[in-house]
Structure formats: structure tokens, C-alpha cells
Amino acid sequence: LIELVVVIVILGILAVTAAPRFLNLQEDARVSAIQGLSGAVNGAGGIVFGKSAIDGIESLAKGATRASITEGSITINTVFGYPTATDLPDAVTGLDNTTDWDGYVSTDGTTYRATFASDSITAYAGITRCYVEYIEPTESGNTPTVNVNVDNCE
Image (cartoon, rainbow, N blue to C red; front, side, top):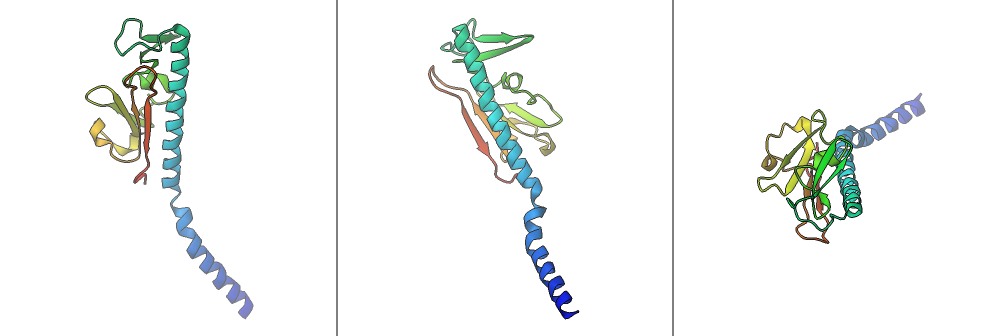
């Protein structure tokens, strides 16, 4: 009986020390989702650039005539071959799903930030934690910058 009590106490101690690690699964899941979105943004940018290169428009600046690609019914405006910040949700499958994601374009129109819809953000400047940020390239030959912020993803 004493051995049984000792085993139960040891299991209790193990459970108490291991429980906090498993209780924080939501933060881990949110960090993983943000990192996955970052990968999707990078992948979509590469695909759009490839299509732009095929069409011969990869060196055209934002707003230039013909600086867009069309696939099916979707037209994506480009800047040096990559999606503009405004058209990024059209390039990334699922990013336009407002049940899952909230995304906003900066006031100058060159940057897009996306975070979880459950965070109730109402403007670009309001997204200060747990987000993916896409910054358009500024000249031909440059790639867009994709930043990931996983601070406070609880």
C-alpha cells in the first residue's frame, strides 16, 4: 500500500510539472498559424512573380500600364512582378476569409498586415502583435519583405 501511495505521489508531481507545458497549446497553435501564413505569402509572391516573368512585366513599377496578371477571373496588380499590398489577399488563398483573418493596407498603400480575425483589429496601425507584414519591393530586382511578429500570440 505504501508503494502504491509513493507511485501516485510521483505521478502527481510529474503531472503538476508537465501540465503548464500542455496548457499553453493555443499560443503554440497561433504562432504556427502565423508562420504558415508567412509561408503562404512568400509562396504566392513567388508564383505571381513567375507569372509576371512569363508575361514580361516583372520590371514594371506599380501603376504602370500592363502591370497586372490575370488568372481566370482574378486580376492581380503587380509592382516589379510581385503582388501589390492591396491585391495580396487575391494572391494568397484563404487570406480573404474574414472569418479567419483580418488584414489591412497601410495608409501609403505599400504594406499589408494580417492577423487573426478574433483579435478585433480595426486598422493597419492597430495590428501591433502576432501578425504577418508584407512590404512591396521598391525597385526592380528586389523582392518583397515579409516580416513575422509572434509577440503575444496568446
